Amino acid sequence: MDDYVIQMRWADIDQLNHVNNVRYLDYADEARLALIESGQLPDDCQIGRCEVEFLRPLLLSMEPVKISGIVEENRLIQEIFTGEGTVFARVTSDLAESRSPIAPSDIDAGSYPFQLRRGDATDGFVGNANHFGIFQEARIRTVSKLIGISSAGGFVVGRVAIDYSVDLPWRKEPYTVRTWLEKFGRSSIELCSEIFDQGTVFARATAVLVGFDLESQRSRPLNDEERAHLEETLRNQQSRTNSF
Image (cartoon, rainbow, N blue to C red; front, side, top):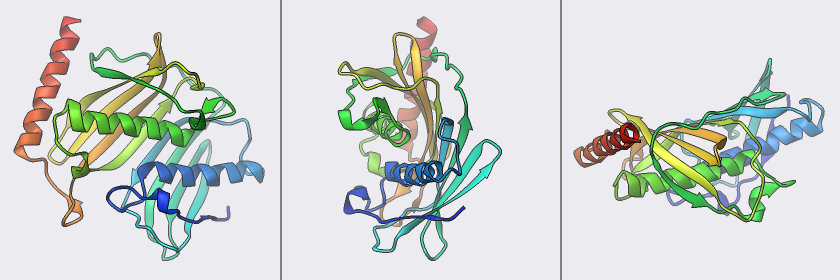
């Protein structure tokens, strides 16, 4: 497959002067749709699972971004890189004729209403990249509020995987999004999120966040205050779940 070429935009950049995580999915979706238009992928395939590995930050440049694509059985593997050959992210999409239902989690976690915008939906349904945008909002809320860490800027996303169950249609009424802390380690946090309504889970995301030092632009271990907040969050989640 030929590499797909796309030009960066100023609006692609986040507060750390890196390409925003969701924009990687925009790039990958553009390249995937081009494969469908050219007949290299069937136009009726659905994404059952999409996983993104963020390998290194991509800075704004006038140099075009390139997206390669390899199909292995029912899996599309894409790499996002620049002309020098450095790979910045890897996107793996499992293609399926149908999706499996996802049972709601029994963890009692914080939730909030999420209002879709009309621009979030194409042909009436929310697309792949915009799902990542919804879950990004949920992560930021959790890191800055529920866990108690003062700034979400102290973390970067190492990996995000979304499992899809049911197409998410646009509607005026908000959906419910909830996020919980799954576990944490020396320098990373794993969060899970669901978009659901009346017992139906539309999609579930798992994200690994890595502690990040803004000055050195390198990963860092979690500090004592962060670990204390995380431990308390896990205890509170477990207590609420057991009493439910």
